[in-house]
Image (cartoon, rainbow, N blue to C red; front, side, top):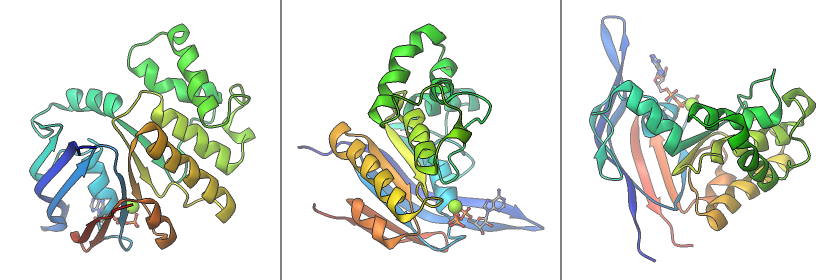
Length: 232
Ligand SMILES: Nc1ncnc2c1ncn2[C@@H]1O[C@H](COP(=O)(O)OP(=O)(O)OP(=O)(O)O)[C@@H](O)[C@H]1O
Ligand SMILES: [Mg+2]
């Protein structure tokens, strides 16, 4: 099968103000990501991983250099357009799940669809479908605090895929989970990649999880020091 390029970063530099000077956090980043890849991003704390995925996930357009997504420039967009693009293009999964505690599992998963302009009635079928997909079809009316950590992360994954995103960004998705639960979540993420064709960009500190990725990136002090596409 042919490879279709989706993400193209060229010469990305990112600075944060720091007193009278500025901190150089991303240094001349060049990166291509193809549709369907499973990308791992590894590097020590403070090396710039979250900063990089904030750029990739359209959360931050204050950088120097060029970011093309499917051939169009991200930087040229207004904040409103960027937010819309984010909603339609990318799903986020975080270490601490980031669920809304005061609403049900189904309502958490519904949020991106409502943001997109659908009515509650229009969302029912899709919400049920994705929750069944992650193995929580029977927990729709539960609240997050009635779930285990692994179940919470499944809800977050359901919420991330509900809008048929072009890619998922997962920042340490198993960082708060025990080994066994972590393995189950990795199985689900891997299955979404292999069977549903979802492109994954995953930050991890765990060298054992890198093996799931067929595109392995290492960052040190704001620079990509290794970028390998591995045959699987
Ligand atoms: N909003 C900000 N303002 C100023 N400096 C920042 C900001 N966000 C991050 N930094 C700095 O940028 C550098 C990279 O931070 P980043 O969060 O990208 O690291 P990371 O690789 O994700 O680390 P971790 O593994 O701990 O999550 C750090 O030196 C950090 O202090
Ligand atoms: Mg981080």
